[in-house]
Structures are given as C-alpha cells and as structure tokens.
Length: 309
Image 1 (tube, rainbow, N blue to C red):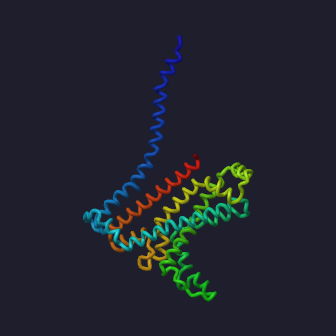
Image 2 (cartoon, helix red, strand yellow):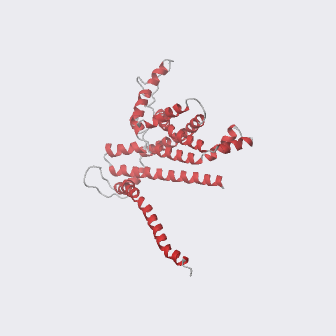
Image 3 (cartoon, one colour):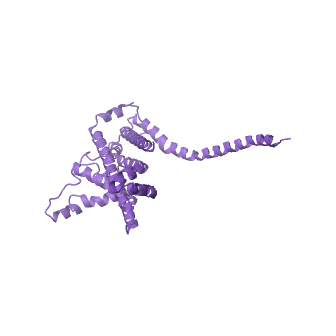
C-alpha cells in the first residue's frame, strides 16, 4: 500500500503555516519604522495643517480657526513670493552646479591618478562640516569691510564689492557656497556608479570604435541614470529647504530679498509671532518638495525603462 501521498498531504498545512508565520514576522519588522514615521512625519504634517488654519501666535493657549485665509494670504504676500523665487534658485541652481562638477570630479578621480584617495577625502570633507560653520567661514571671505576677497581684489586696484549687501551678488554667493559644500555627495554617488560599470562593457565599446566622448555619452551616461536620480533628488531636497547658510551670511537681507522659504518661516514665527501663517508657509514648502521629488523620480524611471526596453 502506498503511504507516501498521505504523508505529504499531512505535512502541507504545517509548511503553509510556517510560511505564513515567517511572513508575519517579516511584516512585524516594519512596525517600528511605521511607528517612527507616524510620530515624526505624519503627525507633524497633520498638526501643521491644523495650525495653518488658525491665527495662533505660537505662545498663547488660545487660537481661532480662520480656515484657508492664511493660504490665500500667501498669494498676495510679496515677501513670500520673493522667498519662493529664491528657494527655486537655491534648489535648482545648486543642484545643477553639483551635478556638473560632481560628475566631472568623479570622472577625473575614477583613474589610477596618484593621490586620488586623498583628493576624494578633501572634496568630501566640507560635507562633514556644519553649515553654520561653513557659512561663518565664507562670511569672513565675502564681507564688505576686511573681507578676504575684497582685500585681495584691492591689491589690484579693484574697488570693494558689496557681495552680501547686494541681493543679486548675495544670492549667487549662497548658491556657490551651498554647491561647494555638498559637491562631495554628488562626486561620491557618481564615483560609485562609475565603478559599478563592468569593464567588459567599456572594452566592447572600444572594440566597436567608440572612444572618448562618444563612449561617455553613449555608454557611461545611460548606465549612470540611477546615480543621476539619487544625486539630483538628494541635492534638490537640500537646496529647496536651505536655511543655515542663508541665515548666517545675510539673515535673509537686505530686507527680505535673499530669504528662502525656510528662513522666512523662522522670521514669521519668531519675529512676527504668527505661527499659523508660518505653518501655512511650511505646508507649501513641504508640498513643493514632495511634488518635485515625485516628478523627478518618475522622469528618471521613465528614462531608465526606455533605455532598458
């Protein structure tokens, strides 16, 4: 008599049960992350939306509901619109500079160049420095009186330049400093991407006659799309929420001309004691960052899928 089949059938439920238990244990591992996400992300956003619909000053125990009037006020607020424009300049300007020079440095250091490891460390070192310290260092360089740059230009008979008192110069200086500080992140991401490209691919391209710039454009750049996506998203998020360097270098001045939305939120809350209006500004900034991040990721995903197909 054949007893094999009943034995196997008898074991099937226990195997399925064991699989379900393993799946449940894996799902439970997500629970701490979900709890932290709810506490530090979901709850603050929901609470911020609630505050944005009040006239709360940030200190008194009472607050009145004003509906969407704080958001309507943003549309006609010239200071907010200037800060919004500056935020786009800081975000996209810094991101563009970091991608160009980060990729260039990665290509140069992805060689057998002597001292390349030391060069990589030096370029990445500013990332480890506090933005407040970085801003203070460059304030001593760009300030009008006794600034290192103006003193140097004075040796050649050049008049002093109001680098930080003129809004046009100041915005450019802020973009430059933010780019210099975090260029090392882009370099590191692109360097990892370059080193992950199989050498066989490059050798095959060389045998087909693709050399130099053609090989870089046709082979290297498409294979670096995941690195491009990571670097652009990280740099853009950092640029759009820029605060420390702006606050240290100009304090948002002269007037409100160099504010980012982040620094304007601080002035609105602590300076004007208008927590409800500051919360509305924060919600708009949050939505902008979320939208640009999603759109950028979708764009890179489509490009990657197009190349793979």
